[in-house]
Amino acid sequence: MRTSRRIDSARDAEQTTASTSPAPPSELSAGSLARAGDASRAPESRSIGPARWSRARTIVAALLLSGSLLLPAIEARSVGVNETKSEMLWNIAKFVQWPEASLATSKGQIVFTILGEDDLAAELANLLSSKTINGKPVFVRFARRPRDAHGSQILYVASSESQRMAEVLMEVAGAPVLTVADTPAFAAHGGMVGFAQDSGKVRFEINLVHAERSGLRISAKLLALARVVETGN
Image (cartoon, rainbow, N blue to C red):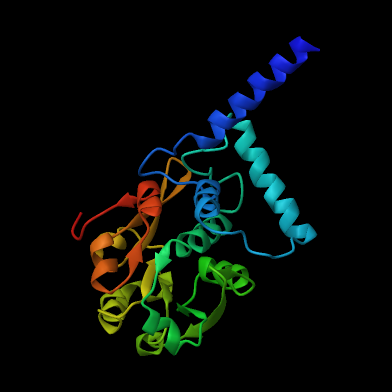
C-alpha cells in the first residue's frame, strides 16, 4: 500500500509540473490560450453538445500524443486549420480589453463584423455566433463596405478584400476595433492580429503598437504566447 501511495504521489507531482510549465514565447496552441484564460477568469457556464465534445476529445487526443498538454502550436492537420484559427481568435479576444464607452454603444455585446468572404470567415461566423467573450454575447454581422465596420469591437477582413486592405484599415484607424486578417504580414502592415503557418503549425502575430493606439489593452499573458511584431517587420 505504501509503495502504491508513493507511485500515486510521484504521478500527481509529474502531472502538476506538466500542467504548470510555461508555453514557449512566440508560439501558441488554442489549448494554452484557453488554460491561460481559465487561470484569470471563471469558466463560462455553457453546456457542451455531443459534436463539440467529440471535437474537444479529438484535440485533447492530438495533444496527448505529442507528449505534452502545452504544445507550442497545433498541427494544422490534427483538426481543420480554419477551425483551429477560429478557436484561437475566440480565445485571443478574452485577453483584450475595450474602452467602456465602446461597449456601452454596443449595448454590452461584442460586435464581430466580417468584411468580405473566405472559408475562415464562414468558420468564424459559425463558431462565434454561439459564444460569449468574458460574459458578453457575440453579435456576428456581415459587411460589404469598409464604413460598415464602424461600431464593431472586432473586425475580420476576409481575403476577398485584400486588394483594398489599406482603405479598410484607414476607415477604422484610431477606433477601438481589433482588426484581424488571415493574409501574410497583416499585423506588420497596419493590422493588429494576423495568422501564420509555420511547418504545418498555426501561429498568430500581434502588433501591440497598433492596438494601443486604438485604445485597446492586450493582456501580458496573451503577448507571452504571441509573436509580437512591429510595423514594417
